[in-house]
Image (cartoon, rainbow, N blue to C red; front, top):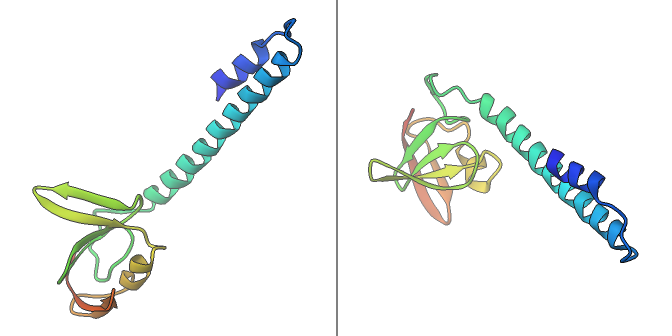
Length: 124
């Protein structure tokens, strides 16, 4: 952000007319983009700080791994898949449809997702 702001401040008026204003506007847009990215990153950091990976989980909650009859999932942020020791884990956000289904379930409980019945096998 500071680089974009410095570039906008250093942009001099030239004989090309409104080139100066266009350059300043472009630098301002870049600064706004950087500010938005920073805001998103800070919110994600705050959410990640709430995860306590060392605590024991009796029910599915933020920061735990849930092993079901069909898949393995980490309840966290940044949807996608990760591979650990050749095992695939889905990263499931708490606000996603699957995350909303999983939150609060305990070992042995069942849930339906994509018209299939699944069972929670293990939580850690």
